Amino acid sequence: MPRMQTSSILSSGPIGRGLVALAISAAALTGCKRSPSGGPGGPTTPAAEPRPVSLVGVTIRPVERTIEITGTLFGEEEVTIAAEVAGRVVEVAADLGDAVEHGSLLARIDSTDYALAVEEQRSVLLTTLAQIGLDSLPSDDVDLDALPIVARARAQADNARAKLDRARKLYERTPPLISEQDFADIQTQYEVATTTVSVERLNAKSLVAEARARASSLRQAEQKLSDTRVIAPAEKPLTYRVAARLVSTGEVVNPGQAMFRLVASERVKFRGQVPERYLRDISAGASAELMSSAFPGTFAATVARISPAIDIQTRSFEVEVEAANPQGLLKPGSFMIARMSSGTKTDAVFVPESAVLQFAGVQRVFSVRDGKVVEHRSRFGKAESGMREVLDELKDVQAVIDRPQGLSAGLAVRITEAAAR
Image 1: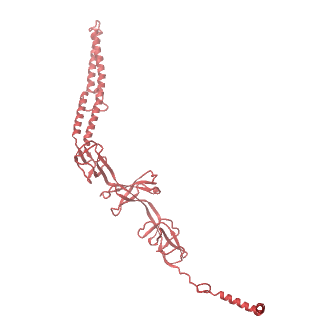
Image 2: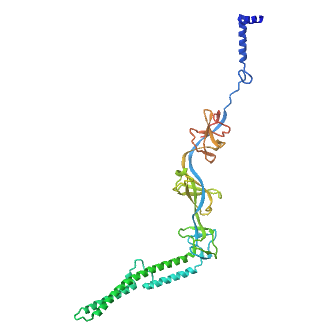
Image 3: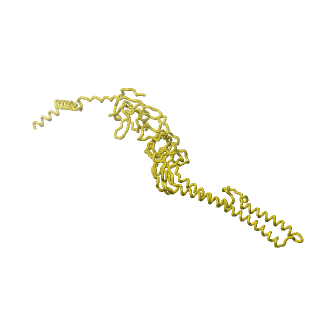
């Protein structure tokens, strides 16, 4: 009971109310103190200083666009020479790697039987011509009446007509100077002579046709005799090289059997597939370069042909690139890389290679805006002379941060060097 009274006095009297107010003020002051860990009343951490960076300028200049593809090299002409006639090979005049001019001898097949066949056909032709009364084959528009066998029949018919005319005058006299039987015999002789002219004309026509057939057989025999000489193609003035010799002396060959494989490689052709998306970028006559792992440098070339169709399986089209090969360094069949010009871009954007940062397969550059780092993700071309082309658009950026390792978007920076222009 006495404690309850004391508490009541403290809380209700003027002194009690003053003590309560003092206690509340002390508690408030105690709550406002800052803890050593940095809470209210503790020490304040100063703000991070901006990181110093240097800038390098963005360069705009024209650049030639190129497309690179892989493919195979071919000769200007590649041909397999096969035997035209059967027989035994008696001579091989060219071997692997030899240079052979167009129309030059490669090999010879025994020609004895073919020479005899030519003589036989020639004799048959001369016999047929003799039956016509000629010593050479007449032209296509020959006058049959002018042929000797027909002319002789016509002469006989003319003589029979003259006899008939004379006999008719004698028979028509009064009295007749020849009998009726004699007149009839002369008239019959004329009719026979006239018929003989028609028969000889048909016979001459048949003999002329036969002579032409014999002449054709003679030409075939002569061609077979000529085919015993196996030669390089003579249709184009090219120099070939023997890529393969497939026969030997003494071997018996049959028609159609391969004997040589030739390649004309003073000019070569590259063929490769170009993706469909580049269809508008390539045209015939555009400059190109060929590259081989076997030789340093490049070989000048030209886009010669473009396929008019796109392969529906690969969604690509074939191009043919031609190049001079006077020294024979480029070998048909080689794996090659072709770099073809696809036009010039006049406003290509370049940045120094040192300004490009790559991490986890992502390439980017950084610029500064309002004192903070701005990130620009893009695709970049190959490094050339310390510069790399920005393949994606880089808007309103005239300078980028050099050596941006450790930077991230939004980081405060301080420029220490002016942008190079």
